[in-house]
Image (cartoon, rainbow, N blue to C red; front, side):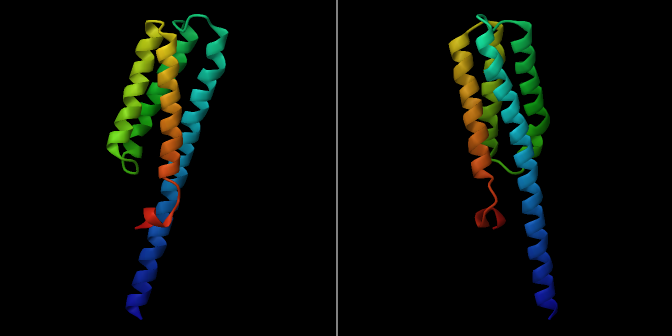
Length: 129
């Protein structure tokens, strides 16, 4: 009887942790996606990407990532997290030097990583084990 109660408590605890993890990751990735979507919307308005608004939004995106990266490292592979950070740093450099094509490439990779992280961290039986 005690063993069954103990196992039930552990299972409920694991389900709670996984649900909390999923909500945290979802909210963070949704906010990251919104920030990248804002960049995609404003970039066509400018011929040069080396302007205050794009650089400001790129820096905000990078600062947001830096703020939440450590928290997400508990749930997502560190190697994948590092690739996202590298692309965000590249975006800052490309915006500063007005390399529009490479900026778009890095932005699309950030969007891809965001979608991939969301897919990897989906609530599933594998994540419980």
